Amino acid sequence: MFHLFTVASDESKMSLLKQTADWNGIAIRVLSITHWTGFIDKILAMKDAVDLLPDDDIACFIDAYDVLIMSPATEILKKFDNYRRNILMSSELNCYPSENQSRYDQIEYSVFEHEEAKNIWGTRRSQAITTNYKYMNSGGYMGYVSDLKRMFQWKTVDEMRQMCELGGDQNFFTQYYLEFATDQVLNIGLDYQQEIFQSLYKVDLRDFAFFSGRLYNHILRTYPCFVHFNGYRDYGRCLVHNKTGEHTDAMTVFVEKMSSSVEFGNSRMDWRLPDFYYRGVKQECIPQKK
Image (cartoon, rainbow, N blue to C red):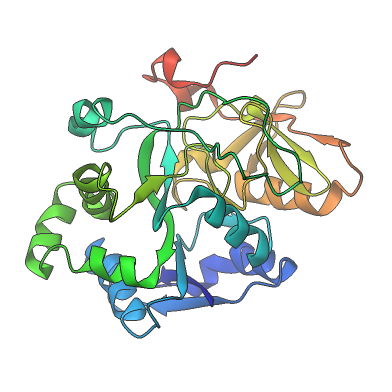
C-alpha cells in the first residue's frame, strides 16, 4: 500500500498541493505541527507516522508548501520499482551543506538505466543520459516502510537535533545518504534522472516544456511526478515572463500550464527565473543542452 505524507503547521498554504493531488486522485496525509520548534519536527513527525505502518508498505514524503503533484500513484510506484532501491531520495544541482561536496565526489553514481526497465511512456532508453542532479534534497523521499524505520532509528533524537542545527533536516538525510550510499543491503539512492522528484532550485526553466498538462524535462527526457520549488517564501517562486516582463508566482504559473496544455506540445515554458537567482552559481552546475 502507498502512503503520501507531508508535514505542515499552516494548511492554508497547501492549496495548490491539494489541488494537484485531487487532479491526480492521490490522498495526502497531513502531519500537523501546532508549535514549530525546528526542522527536526519534520523528521520526528515522519518517524512517528511510519512506525504505525506495515513494513512492506511504501511511504513517500514531500514538502507541503512548495510542491505540485504531476501524476497518479500508479506512475510513482512504477518508477520507484524501476529504480530498484529500498529508499529513493530527491536530488538537486546544489550541494548543501556545502562542506559535504568532497564526500559526494567519492561516490560513483549510476543513472536510471536497467536492462528490463522501460519508462512510464513505454519506450526504452537507447543510451544513458548524463545528469548533474547528484546532491541529496530533503524535500522528497520514498521507500519501503521497514527501511524508513531503520533510517529514523539511525540516530537518537538528541543527535538528530544537533544535526538539524547544522543544516536542517537536509543535513540529517545527507549524512545518512553519504554514510550508506555504497551499502548494498540498505540500498539507498538518489533520483538522479528526476523521474519522480523534480527539483527546480537553480535550474534553467528552458530545460522544460509542458506536454498534455505534464512538465517535461527535455534535457533528461523525463516527466517528473512531483515538482519542488524550494521554499514557500523563497525568491525563486517569482517568475518573469520572457516577452512581457510580467512577474508572477511560480507555482501559479505551473498550475495554469497544467490545466491549459490540453493538446500535446502546445504549451512551452515561456517564463524564466529572475537573473539574480543564478548569482554565484557555477556554470557547470547547469545541465548542458544537446
